[in-house]
Length: 469
Image (tube, rainbow, N blue to C red; front, side, top):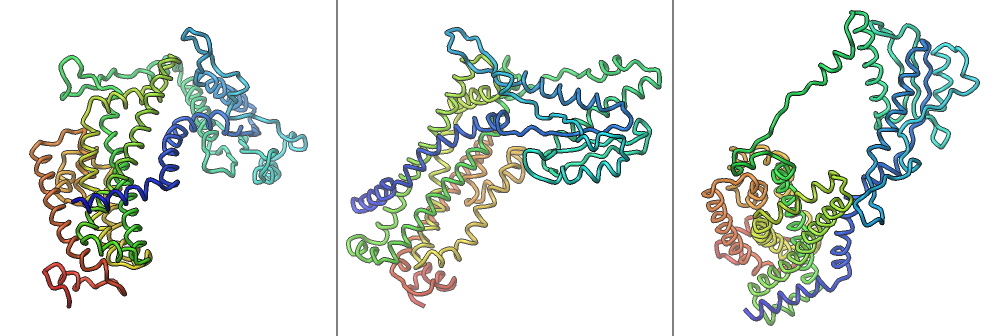
């Protein structure tokens, strides 16, 4: 056991002493913080102002479109997140108006196009301006033809080269659709305000959860987060298992290719060497995961405190507070630790065995193809398991050991039956023991092998005790 622990210590120190390892550890909280703040910053600062022109042959709809664009800018300023001041009180202030610009700005038609030109001529002359790039380029042109109105077959022409941003088009469509309906109500002698109030009616719905204690059945943000948080942990589990298993594979191939492994095997047995590497890289993975989870928890606490100080009730602050409560009051973290350990040993044993059979990374990549297909299945299933966590598909996949850590982690919030938790855990642990036994036999014979990797039939002979063909 002492020699196994020495191998584990060497493997652990070799990885944690690298600059890349600690750079990745330190960058993770930065990435988490940036991902929380960057979307709001880009929405406020990096979104360009969309300039557009309107040519309305009817003279009826241009004021409506311009007014809708201006109203959109006012709503953006009202929705701007409040920033805390240095005043000791909990008062907040909003950013200056020039920092929160309107998304759209109507510009006049060029002087040479300001006359009553035919729509076809006008559009032909506008197309170069719409197709060019630069500060003087137009984002869109709204052409309202003659006869356009309710019941007319004349279509409004919306010219825009950027089909990825449909915000202005949607604004124009909503505005003119509302105007068409108002005109139709007036034609039919109906009061548009009464109809608007009627359409605004919504039935009150109280979402209640029967599994919660009496008096606290109402479903809130924390409950919705509880339902989907395991998917985040499944993704984190997948990344961690793949990263540490890949680290283990590269380490074995490197030591085998530079003949260092022959020197080490003169002092330890192949089994001791294999178990030492598994334990050492597992320790590296635990350090990495602890840093990741600590960063997520720290950022969530920071967001919660920031929201409390700002007293703004922001969505990010509510989500962070719900996440902190979830991690404190559930068994997500213990389940994650258990399934990470099981998933790591399962896949690391396979990757370690693949490394013992190959002399180069290129050879290993050819053998990793089937393993990657197996590993990709949990990612494909991740959006579907939470929708029916105790359904037939989730229950069936829970009993397949390579998928058990991912599927059961995804089912944690749904409280699967205890007999399934115990039964799948026993099945998973039994499979891991059998797998490690098989991997140990292959590793013992393949670690000093040179030349081409063995064929599948030769591996079977190794497993049944026939060391040579």
